[in-house]
Length: 384
Image (tube, rainbow, N blue to C red; front, top):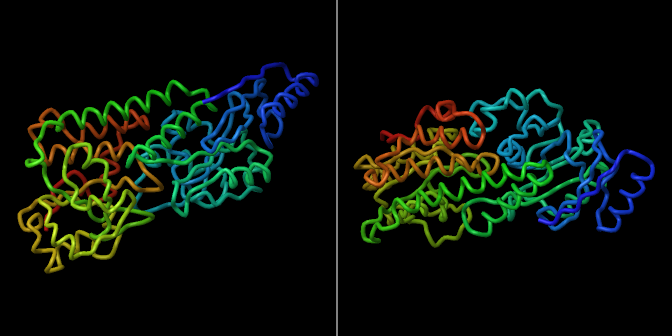
């Protein structure tokens, strides 16, 4: 990432020099030096926009699905001076580990607008953060763009640093995630922590893959993930054809070939596939009659599935909750690996491993608190 630094005391001459330098590098709409900072950096954000920001910023707000999560990953949650309404609304079931860890802190902060990036520029201007971070998932109704970032910056006069949120479903979305972390880290002076997070993800995936890499294709288990959360709870036909944990532990995803995005499959297809193992995103219990679990119990066609009849239905924690909770994706993968190939994961206690992962990402071991939100159905066989 390109970065140019300008330093100096807050004098008239230096302020003039800053303006000249900002114009020379093509920065737009950055306003004045805020919070008493004596340095201004020009960073290139995830959309290729050159943005001049105070260095380091003393306060920030995060707009869009998952943006605040990245701030927590970078251990700078105390810089947040405003939040969107999802952080302030009390909810019966909370599936975001960062919110379980720091929700009380965030709940008392001023409001910046509605969730999913529906900002209120006047509220943000009244709070007066030094920098606004803005993100969203590419290809969804909740994504963001350079144009939206420019518009918010023009309305507030506050630097807006924007980037796609990314995911771990494919190389392109993984690159988006890494760029987002590095961009935020560059602005905050947390480059080392950003690289630590990226290296941890890479090492964890490599460990998962290495444990099962030599399993012959004929011995790889056939699996299905149902009830996958996507902008809310869903039933048994809701799945992820590119569900990362299955790929990492060399399991055959029955829905492979249906793309990389969230998909709804025909119930008849699921019956025809008859996967050996079924995993259920336990976020489904927010639906009437426990969603996918209730369907497996009451639908005659689904009752005939071998996994249902023979007790091979298991719960995993939802990772799609206000965009991807990366720590939960990784934790789920160890439970799935242990379930499918216990000899390859003999040294792993999935719950202990989950808390190790949560502690690295958000600083607190929240597995028990998170699983209790879902009646402790995660990381367990689901009785039918």
